[in-house]
Image: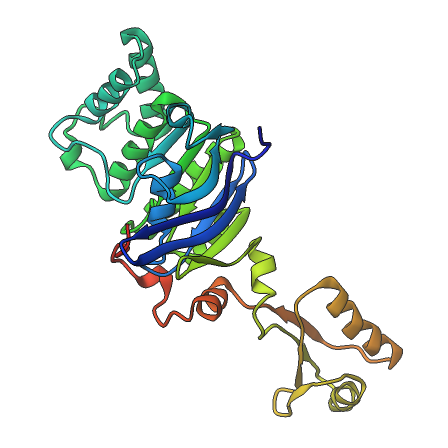
Length: 320
């Protein structure tokens, strides 16, 4: 029915008189990472719960894996895996027993379940700890086990709801490598995260959710160009070249002490070429040229009006 792995058109959800999702539209191509950003309470987890069939939408045309959520939720469940904010690992049993339990829940024959368990424990570097109670695992190990359990049913679409919150930097980077490997294998990943660097590193496309609406969406570079503040910086060693460049270029900010000029720019190739062409025409050569573009922090603050950096907020969303 659709070439997209996930589509949502006019998705709405309210709790009482509070509108949580106010007609959002999303489209996620297969084999990509789509990241949903937003401040706490924006409704990110609500989107994940709806698209993974855990709760129902009030309105919207929703398809996951080519299946209509309204008419065939069972088919959607067979196509997806979900790793939530909070670990589904049972700490009272071993890592291997957690995996085998998940295999039983998926109805895998015993031999196939054990084979799948062995393969995934090896893939996530958990073989040595497989016989230990999961309660003894570090935070990073528990998240790896959680994701391994999600993959037991070989889902082609995975929802990861803030999978690295609370992990140390090394564990977070390990999780990034795992996510990249999944996408290389053709898996579609729908990722919510509080870490802007994470979205920048992983996502093919990003949507920023604020007050129940999509404030903007696109690639990381497209979103960065929405925010003013980008510029080209030219530095000179020759004071004469510096003064001539300041005359040849428009709308420059001068730094006489550093012999540097700053020119507003969206960071595009066309804008950079315009600056270089004017310098060439005037016969001026800069000693150093750097291009500065806004980062996702700037995008987040500009689009959401948030005063709290997303990547430093550890509390979970108020709206579920």
